Length: 288
Image (cartoon, rainbow, N blue to C red; front, side):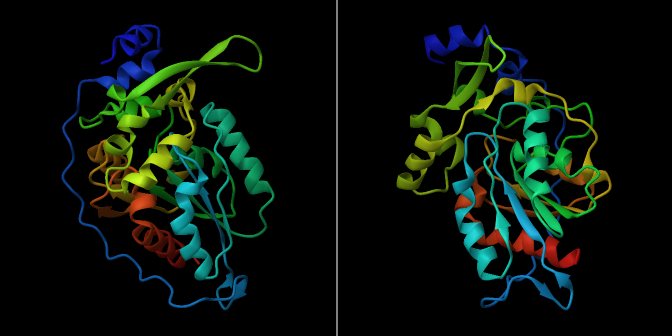
């Protein structure tokens, strides 16, 4: 580790320490993936059909990413005739990020399918709670926390994450005064860590536009989990270096999610948008 980062890490809260090493639990056996639903062929008219109104599909990005990471998925969903929203996730704190997503959902008419990548999975789990319009939850290489769990704890539950060796902490001003700590992935290490199966040029753009995540967001413990009452689907990225695939699989099994696995990096929405779209459409069709 670079000397400067080692010095800064000493002042960090438990988040980075957990990401950089913890006592691993034994990984679960791989799940047998279901056959993904075939994507719709040709354009379809958005709105109502014989099954009722089409749900709005809301895509929530995670840490070190932005809403553009969903571009390939958005194009495919729109061609299939679905209304789509991909709001900016503030990445400042789990409770505040969840409240913000709820405000986005409040402006949506009709049914909703919520999709979360990475830390975005924790956000959709909270935002969907008590919202009867949410038909399905879809977790894309994502955290699926239960009450009292944090993203940092879940990432450290199984071996395999190398994120802690690639991030730099930096301070930022808090609205009420004082400073917080946020994390960014070193641009030179971004592709290998986050997007190993994305072309170098695109990964360089992703590294330059990554949105930092506050350590407070990764440390904050989740409230009640909506996946206990709403059907869920999960895509496991088996080459993920941010969240250990064993952790993704363990969380998905616990939630009773319909599981699909794909050989992809953490940036699976960028590298494998067709697979991501298929999982989402499977969830949509199964809950209409």
